[in-house]
Image (cartoon, rainbow, N blue to C red; front, side, top):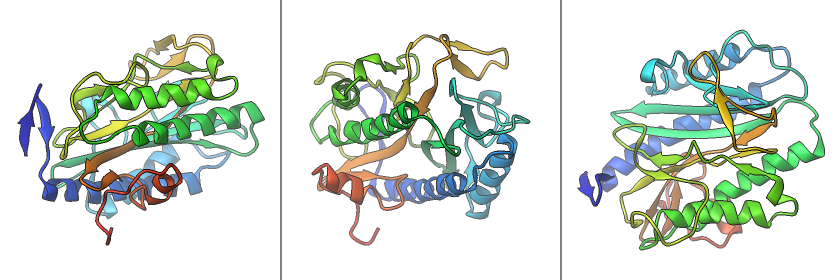
Length: 278
């Protein structure tokens, strides 16, 4: 591990390999939660499922205790954008539940998020979720060795805005992606908007978490009295997706995707950069 440029942590291959193991645990946990979430359960029920799985795989939840955060996952429902605290809230039919999850394994972190529709939701909200998830992959697809961090945000924003009706969506600016490695949040920030060609250079060993948060309307948000839960000011609903990824000599490697990102990267014409046996 070394420091490159403005305090960026550059990982050695064996360190990235541990981050991949941590990423698989997070990916497994999110898939388990996607399959488990249903109307009538509480957000605390989801949290218990997540903690049990992470610990059963030999890792530790990295959200729990982080600056005092009391839970293993963040569960943000409907107009909650991010950092929702699991608790007694009962999930209802038609809710959108964004689940953010991370773990640390042998000192190395991973972080990812999904948004799940519970039962039937409107076509417009299904499209909000689809656009948000696709924008994440378009951001990753825009990254290449020698490029710049802002290329990622430009890829996210360009996709959202090119979508029919995309000008009506809000791309949250106050909460952005980040570097990740021996700590959960590290330089550089990875915004989900902006012009390409700016910011730190994308080099081997730099690992980033990309996480667009897209709303039905405003980008203005308020943090509730619990000092964590962020909600939209206009009550519009929000979607949130995240993956941790890195770049190698052969392409992109999505450390928190169970297949390493192979399938989605192939659809976008982006070379896969992970090991063949992964």
